[in-house]
Image (tube, rainbow, N blue to C red; front, top):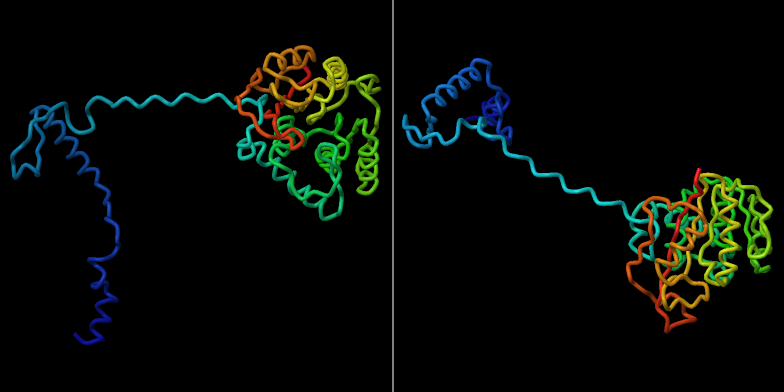
Length: 323
């Protein structure tokens, strides 16, 4: 065949008949064919056998329970039970930083901390004030889980107890919230005021001791935060301060509270078991956000270099003032 005739043959489609399309073509049966098939099925059902070309020619195989597709319906498997949502009130679980909503909040905090680092703005962690590019995972867990579950992005009036010059106070102020910080460390309150002036934030700081003085605020706060502070107070001072904080919340306002937890926790006011946590919540008169009850998974960590012989963990509560 000449090249011209071969080209004409390809244009006519002769060269594609066996290889194209590469998938099997499904042809729609006509209504007459479908009617004939249904008639055949009815006839087969009455005779008790089904024709089968696989059996060879006109032979038929016995019918067992009816024509294909007309037997008893196979029961659908039962849907698996829906697991309960994870508890908010719990001990430290690093995997929470991989799950929403804490994961997204952790990303926002990391980015904000990086911006502060590039602006040469120091940030305090455990009372140590310096420039920081990152946070250790346990501290990031406290901040991210507490802020996320307290829905901090929606808060406009915020009070932070014991968080002078800390990342949560700065992040909330940078988002436009009015933030009041109470910290007895005057060095940290001065650093907080300096940051507010530098960036134009609505951020105030006071060294007033809330264990002995009233806030002087009406019950209108959207959010109160306190990250690993109460363990440094004895039981009496601890409850007095938290009672004042709870009273300052508006109906529906939330308290995000973290603390050292466990039998070996070094803080004198650390909570030791779920019973002590439940007693504290009852004393405050606040509601649990989500599922009630505090969950201790039993894991303990080396969290404080100043106490290398002590294994403990952090606990988190997110509570809400009843409407």
